[in-house]
Length: 441
Image 1: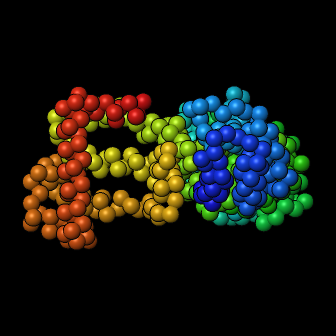
Image 2: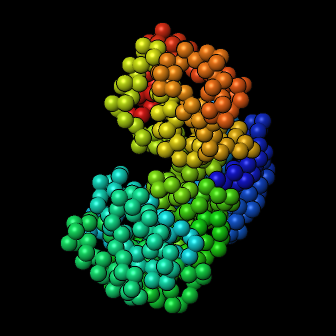
Image 3: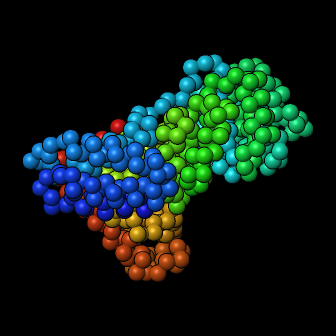
């Protein structure tokens, strides 16, 4: 995500490396490189120029204190301006009304239906709501089936009328149904088209007029760059939506849409969606995104994702086992499962300050743990609970059962033993499992 932009900005800041002070000359060359980086990231030239003009003005007005280099100061200025460009502060979803009606709009292929499922899951698991999904796409039969599958996966009812070809009536009937069933949030998935057209706009505007939604979210594929911004403007002119959702941010996106959509339509980005998993939906925080673009990491989001998977009772048991030097392969497998639930592995590592740049050229697959899990799965329950009994013959059997060679098993056993030794040392210094519990709080 934003790898190319991050790299170009980092290169721009190097213009100030070794400089003792900020001057018009070195700021001008740095700002020029920043503007080029933004334009290459599919940011409109006028927006890029306005942005860099503000950066230059701020930079020349700052005095560099002894403890901070000009390069560091420029990074801070750019981070603040990037955050402001993307909205400044997070924009909350308005769910105070009962029921709250949320209308989902966007082009076909933008990820509307998947996002609807993710939003229902988010509101159910994190906000304690009882959502109802409404299949109001009357043109794409697969949309109804897709929504049903998503609803089953997250345990949320999907209202649909397969024979009804009136989207307005379906939406109105769904609201009545929701009131009878006690649903306090209604998420209406509307039809999309391959391009903006009058028929589509009229239909979604009619649905809006009929149900008077509390929120209208425009879902946009961030990989379409500046075209996404232009489409958002066309939708906003007709719908006056309340917020934007950026999907496919885990793809090869240049970042132009994320950076400029707020500036262009004056509506906040409320969510970012990455991947197909239904728990991969994040509230959009402009400052955190700016930090990640500049390679500063995003520890806050990382901790929040860890908290979402945190089980206090399980953590207490784990802490006790670590203190007694009884950490085994079953415990290790449980920890792997929790990490996998937190999201894309490379994305998670990129949230750690300094790590993003180090791994930018490394392909880290979400299947990275599969080999380890296969080896643990090839052990007997007794072996998983008693790692020390695994001798040479057992290792050969584990290698055969997991489809790995003996060297892979030996390396894994060595790494596991090193990890246990480190935990043993932590116990000697009185650290125990507090670090794990603190991280989860």
